[in-house]
Image (tube, rainbow, N blue to C red; front, side, top):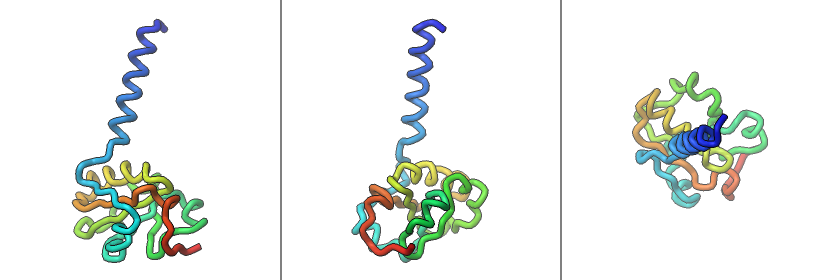
Length: 124
């Protein structure tokens, strides 16, 4: 493999990662205080894996891991806001894109910093 081929492949990989992780315009990211105000009126979805969920979760959350979201998207109502969180916030971007594509969800909100930054009530 020539050095130029390696450079081009590296650039393509970087562009792919940046595009995949870019927050969509229709997704809002809220600080904890704002998130707390309305999450009880919405569908609160924890997109972490089940083993992460079992260590503790926000009261009222349903666990639909990102790895299962495509198959379980029908469990999400497209007419109600969806509040998402994961461990740090990065998986929410992918989850929002799946929900928009599969279910046509219009209102998607994520918790800034994810569960790791949550200081509210949790269930273990």
